[in-house]
Image (tube, rainbow, N blue to C red; front, side, top):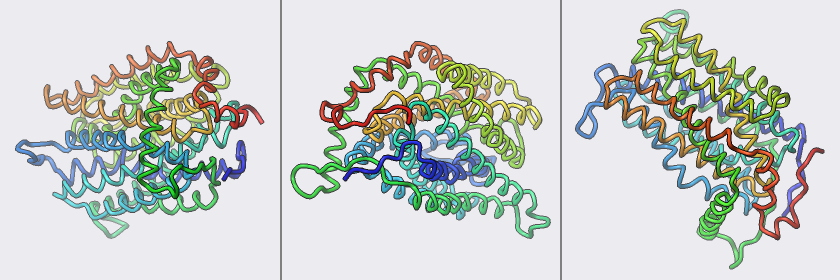
Amino acid sequence: MTSVGHENDPDAIRAWITYDWANSAYATTILAAVLPAYFAAEVVGDGGVVLFGRNWTGQDLWALAVGVGPLIMFLLTPVLGAIADFSASKKRFLTVFATWGALLASLLFFSTSGDVLLSLGLFLLAHLGFVGANVFYDAYLPDLTTDDTIDMVSSRGFAWGYLGGGLHLLLSLALIQLSDGPIPIDSALATRIAIGSAGIWWLVFGVISFRRLPRVGTSQPLSGGTPTWWSYARFGFGRTLATLRKVARNRPLLVFIIAFMLFNDGVQTTIALAAVYATETLDLRITVVVGGVLLVQLVAFFGAMGFGRLAVRIGAKRALLASIAVWAAVTLAAFFLPVGQAAPFLALAVVIGFVLGGTQALSRSLYGSMIPEDQSAEFYGFYSVFSKFSSIWGPFAFAFVRQSTGSARLAILSIAIFFIAGGLLFRSVDIDQGRQNRADLRTPAQVESAPHRGAT
């Protein structure tokens, strides 16, 4: 069955953007702000916790947790992407993973003081749903855009996601601030409500997106009779290996992926560990930390839109290189942040917000412009794999340096290496050649049937 074309369809793009609004509540409240700080301060506590014969701080455990989840998805996402392309099931997979992640995220409401393993277990399972859903969400982008619109649509998705996540975080901050006062509940309960409600937000707005999001792609019958999960999985592994060979022989795409792995590792590590770094190392209150992440979200809306326009004026490559350079400076500034002072932390949050949107949106759209749209889930499976594979090493490096030196400041400074190496490698990527090589990534049969990708 062949889906109807939806390139540059305003209704389809709005439905796609709505999902970014939906899942960003998880990204801000659970992944970046409230849960990390709550986990370090309340669930683990100042004295740490003894696991596997050694004492762990909340900062160290969180660094390991945000590394383990991507390691698991590294093994699954390329297979899921290939299966979704073959069966035209991007929407189905997106719905299943998002629903699973949202429901488990809402159960984090029940995590209280001392529930270390419960909190980590629920977080890891919810995070698998979040990462898995993003494979299929990202894979929609080439189906809904053309070369001349992909950068701006990608930027709009991130921008509205930042607004959605920021709005939920603002409501969460208000609830926490007004607890033990106008709102007659204690602050711990208010924090748990904020965390659990992020999953509900994700689910409710996700359903709105799923109802309006069109089905895209072309389903193809598998040989051997009625397809089963096993036959799809076997095909998925085979196609994953074939995709790996395609990427390996296409130098611009291969170099981009390696560079992306490096600088994205720095981005993801900085975002994931900022809250616990601020709570434990800088001795800032949870309300200040949440306020900082809220600033990031609000500024990121304008940053994503601004970098989208900057990419039109100077090119996406130059705009992305500029954002990577700023990220390297951010890690240096974080090393010198003073203890107990909110203003410098909040000022750095503004800088992070400005470059965060541009880095994420332009990376996604540059990659999308170098892959065939009829195999987008397969190739975005790889994109997500390397995105999450890169997210492993930064947190592990942070935990290793922190454990070895006893200094979280040196640990955060070590992340600059990822930005410097990734930026230098990205400079050598020939984007135009990568786009010209796009047809070489298809099989002969796909070249004959594939639609022309251009402006409409």
